[in-house]
Length: 144
Image (tube, rainbow, N blue to C red):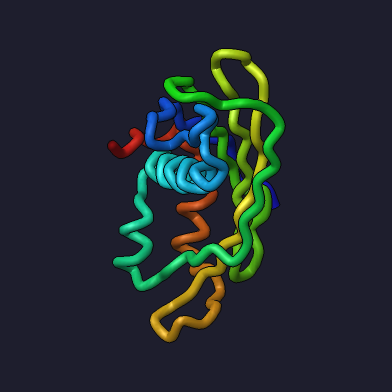
């Protein structure tokens, strides 16, 4: 089940996020995915912190990235994120990273997350939280 529309998080690549060759260091894409997931939640009127306050955690159990083009220091990128699957106790976020300098998709990836409760075991996504995930961001003022 695909949930709603994508969210786009715009990020400027900092010097410390590059390697000796001036290219974005590969592991930083996962930090950018995380930043985009946070923006996806805020666009729907809730935060990841609120999920935790309700007693739920979303540990990442799988992460992939396929690098298709360059991202350099001081480039602006757009990380497009959306939920591509929502199951009983898990969800998958998909990502596309576009380099604004070239307009090309330079990286794609996904992360799988499992809903866990206080006992640190998988739990069925509660109806209220499922409703949050299905929100249309155009119906909400984005949180900052």
